[in-house]
Image (cartoon, rainbow, N blue to C red; front, top):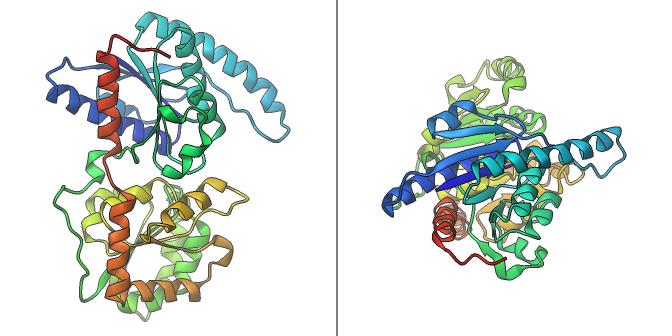
Length: 370
């Protein structure tokens, strides 16, 4: 079995690909099949160590981006995409995999178009409530379409090929099947994160209410590499007469090691929301402003319907409002428990496991019709 993985060169695309690759190895072993040969096609080798650890071979495929605004880069990138299709075509022809799994993004377009020309089946997954243009393009010839949000199904013309699988998540970020979060008495732990790069707006707002937070809670704050020294310097001044032990800032943080200790998350509306939901952690979600990213606002609104999050639009964010929402959740057991239950409905299944089993089913089938 040969499988090619492809997707945009960001963590939001790459880590779900690795989750499916991880699950695929487990599934093939459980089905007593030969260990699959796996490849990653992309413009950049996003995480060489992770690829090597999973026995995945990297192949460079040039790609470009189609911008909605006027840019001379568009002209250059059209040629890069066309060149990428040619390179992907011959690399796929040499390997001739059984299937291509795409996580979307323009990085995946050349490989998926080349696979279509070679009649190699493509499965794609999209993590957003409103699919991006690259995903909509690939969906036109994809054999199967997997999505994280049921709200996104209506955007696809071939809805008979769409399945709501949830988000593929690496096993290390998932709790045991019997995990049950319970409302904790006493001092509670709050995790604050603005994503891998951090958020200046969230960081500033947290610092404004840091004395009040540290008086009642423990705060673990992932600031982003670019912000860590500034946050450390400012927080040391702010907390000079307060309990400094209640505050721990980090540039980056492996959340898998602390999820079981966290009582509340304050975060953006990225794919990490599915991890928070898997651990049944009530969350305050502050999506990036719509003018910057419409995806995050729509994703947050979809999660809002389950009751697992409280949403604060970035333009409305203030220290006073955030502190009130935090206290309302953590001081009231009935509010907290309702959000816990909402998390269970938001995260309903292991997306990586569902997708990997479908990959096996398609590969073993000798009657694939487009």
